[in-house]
Image (cartoon, rainbow, N blue to C red; front, side, top):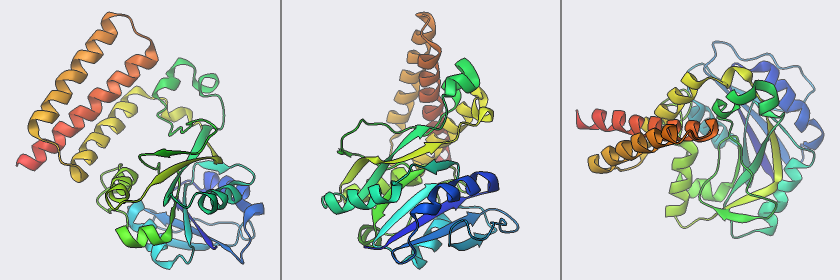
Length: 284
């Protein structure tokens, strides 16, 4: 079994260096290859030689899916792992990914475990509810799930070859989000199954700058607009989602709900409003 590791990166050289350092001891070049898939920068990042043997693909145009698809075309692995640049992998991470696919032949895709590298509340206090970190923790047992998450996911190359590349209308550098959601749905429609791998563990950076309510709501609204690109929702459904989300948020305020509950309801409403934005564009 050969494994290809594709690291999507954009203008985060220090984070990328930390990730590569965490991978360094796990790369056996006879069976594992690393692609740094950089997009949206005028010049490629300068990466110190010797951290990890890799191929550096650079695309000045913005588009995470575009550069991931290019890396996919060049990858030779039977298993393809995708990692974001703002995390580090746990010791034995790649062994765990390969063991998951070897032991669970029923799954064509893997959703890995993602924990915060530090205690978010200790770093930013109550505003941690607005960090919007992509945390994944379904417990300690392998189980079937509906979808992957882009920061830590892997696929059998045969499944990706069957369903096709990532939708380049989606993801950072395009509409912003939802590329992994669309891919997950496409895999399920084709009859493939997705599993959660608790041992495939990574730790996500906690950036205090992300603890911003306005940013949190903007991102959620973008997600709603992206959802309308790759999913079919009627006008009635979208209007209903907005009405329900407004009611839920008002009720949460009325009962003096926790800050975490308020943030969840604000996110629900922002997504619904983003879907309405997307609906308006379709109607034009």
